[in-house]
Image 1 (cartoon, rainbow, N blue to C red):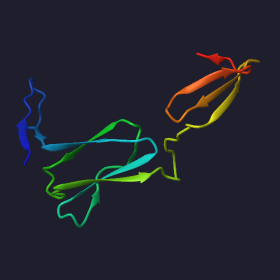
Image 2: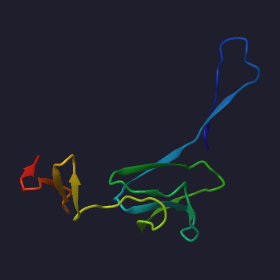
Image 3: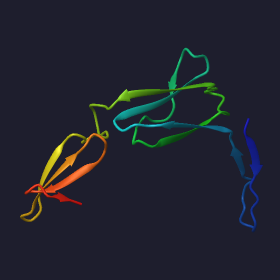
Image 4: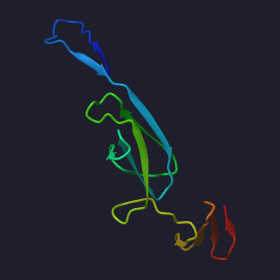
Length: 131
């Protein structure tokens, strides 16, 4: 059950009493990976699951979601995270590891190699490493 508090106004322009309801919530945190789609689901019986909020794409960081525990219509007690490979529809993070790009910046061609370990190496046309 949530907490109900009265809002106190100063001045004579208050026309009606107002209340502020404070619900209890649980914070769910999970590590994400680029190229993965995450959907948070909840259930009260481990049989029927419903999606909570919108799905989102991972970025390699930690995502946080707040879920009300006071909402009587949902009464969710159990949570799970559905993790899918990147979608073919819409935009999703893409890895460029293992690719090579050749840039021509005003007559000075450069090559950029993106490595699997996340590092990139820039070289000039003659093979000299550029910092």
